Image (cartoon, rainbow, N blue to C red; front, side, top):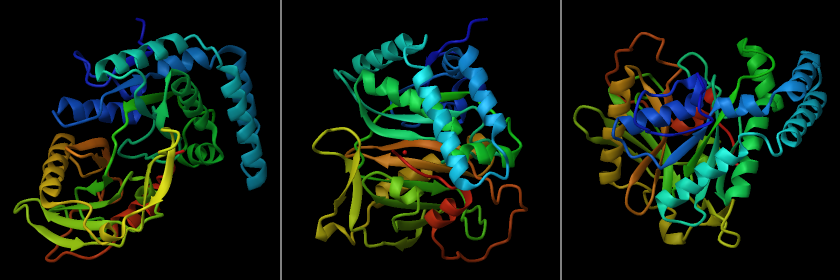
Length: 356
């Protein structure tokens, strides 16, 4: 049976497996099938990776990874992993799935009515975001990618991020295959976010499952999930739908599309009058509560997710199982505890970078 090298998020028919579209691709497809708002996207499947990283190239990558000593110093590990990534990028230039990827990008442009839509190109490892293993942040993503040529290069760089020093070390600690998992890549319409953030369907401080905690910042959410920005924090009751806690932080900067080139991201100053203004209103918070409950109800376990809000809508861009409190007995809680979700999430899942 021939497996596709590209597929669409939310395509009719049987839902694709994580082995084909990776954890992120599978999650987005699930969210779409639940009727939630997900930006248009296609997935470059693991089949494309396997068709590109094959033969002598795959053999050489395997040899180099296997030769890395577990006790190697950090400088050696970074140097060797960098060489492996450059080998993969060079060796996949003009790979056999390239035409299909560019054709899918052209179809996305036609769907959106744009000549060259800006997209996020996001790694989606076949091993990431399972309930017992979280590779979140270990692989690369690229925002505001513009044009077919840049999309093709970003896909190959996502493939290569299987072999960063961190990803290799993470797999070694986790007991995964030392030579890496096949990589799928999500190519998704970029949301021009006025604000963005994360939610968790329990309180990460005490495990209280009767709450949803939301954190948000102006602009794109990358500074929040990487722990470099202090977000607004809201705690909502799942049953009464009441906003129990509102903690509004000063937000002096935001990350947004580079206004000069139209591609990539830059950090800019926030207008003085907006720095202490809440980044989310009540209507958006209630919509996030509905979305979060729907995702949790479908999954059957607590979830944490990411969202972006443009001038009109709240968009979900990720959801994954919560991995800290889920396996513990549900605690009895009589009052809410304070704490910062972004810092907890960052410390526990090591989400990083947008280069995501």
